[in-house]
Image (tube, rainbow, N blue to C red; front, side):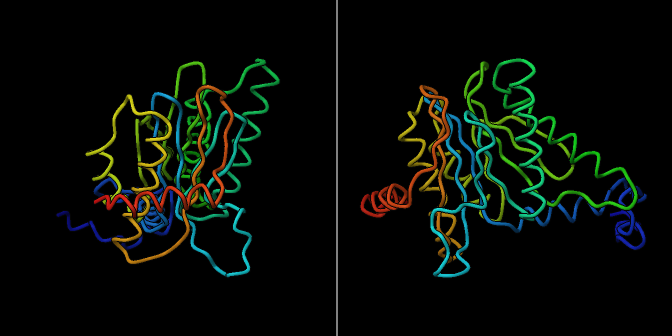
Length: 245
């Protein structure tokens, strides 16, 4: 390991690379994401599914309100992990891009296009003094003219496409399940069950009990739908009843 590996003065300014080629502020932002609640996106033959853990702060909270899953446009949703305030600003920007695209080109924005534009904003905040990186990762999922798409952006501004992707503290647990059970040809119902199961197992591994929120975008309708608490609980009961490992 390089003798310059310790942060020292190199973590005080976002614009300064350490001698071994690292931007520590970006790495710190990535660590914020890695310690956040688990989010998950999955594309299948019949659409896409987004899922997230949401920790209940109070028994008086509105169960229907979501702060990890967002509707960006009718055909497009997003799951976020990291600093919620950062996520809210970027989601607002994504919604503006989606509406501008509709007005300019008279068609819904592609999932990759919006992922790239949000990635561009994030990257900009890694190369200017006096700012900090956005401490949030976003999974965009939706249906566009290219198909059923899932993209993930991280605090560095990088974005990539996936068939299925998990981010956050339960990533390792979820990815193990996805690698074993994900199939390209699975239908939307089976994909939803797999997302719920993955999040349940991630929570069980940490002995925690936040609620689960799920959104689906069927290819048949291209309209995002947030599942109700009752619908999600029904999936959870089926998982418990089947004794799935």
